Image (cartoon, rainbow, N blue to C red; front, side, top):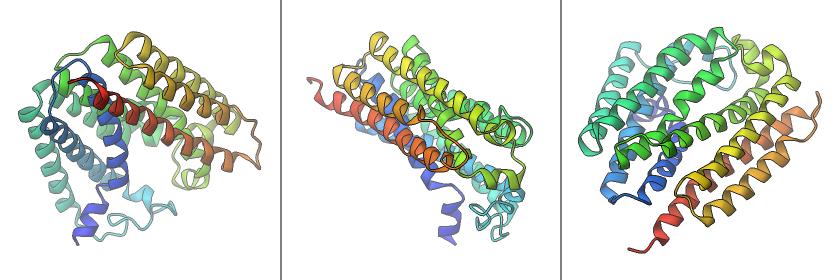
Length: 288
C-alpha cells in the first residue's frame, strides 16, 4: 500500500524538478550566505508541494489515464486508492511543504510555490490540458516555478536574475514537452488531449521546438552575461545548448520523427542536469 501511495506522487517528476530547484538555489548562493540545512529544507518543501500537485493530477486525470497505454495501470486509474483519501493525502503534502518553506526559508518562497501549484492544478490540469493547444505553455509556467523558488529561498527577493532564470526554464519546458508528445502521439490522440503535434502536425511542432531551443540558448547565455554564473557555467551551457540545437534542427518526416523526438527529449535532460550541476560545482569551488 505504501508503494501505491508513493507512486501517485510521481517520484520521477519530483526528482527532475528538484534538480531545477538546486539550480536556482546554487545560482543565488553565489552572492548570499547559505547552509546545507536551508538547501535540504527547500528541496523538502518544494518536493512535498510537487508531490501534492501530482496526486491531484492523478485524481483528475484518471479518466484520461485509462485511455493511455502508458498510464492505464496507475493506481487511481485502476481504482485501487480511494479518491477521498487521495485528496486528504494531497492536502497534507501541500500544507507540509508550504509550512517547511514558510518556516525554514521565507514567506516569499512559500507564496510563489503556492502560485505555481495553482497554475499546475487549476489552470493546467483542470482546464487548459483538456481544452487548448496552449496547455503546454500554461504547464511550462508551473514547471518553471521550482528553480525560482530555489532562488528565492536564498535571496528572499525577486531580481532580474530571478526573472531570467524563470524565463529560461519556461522556454526549456516547451521543446521538452513537445518531444514527449511526439513520441507518445497515439496516447495523446486516444485521450483526446489537444497538444500541438496532434492538433497542428509534427512539422509545425518541429518549427516551434527549434524556436524555443534558440530562445532557451539566448536566455542561458544571458544568465552568464547578466547574472553571477561563471566561466565554467558558460562552457557547459554553451556545449549543452549546441548539442540540443544540433539534434533539434535535424530534418524530420513521418518515419523519423519518433526516434528524433526521443533524442530531443534525452538531450533536454542532459541540458538541465548539466546546467544545474555546473552551478553546484561553481558554488563548491568558491573561496570560503
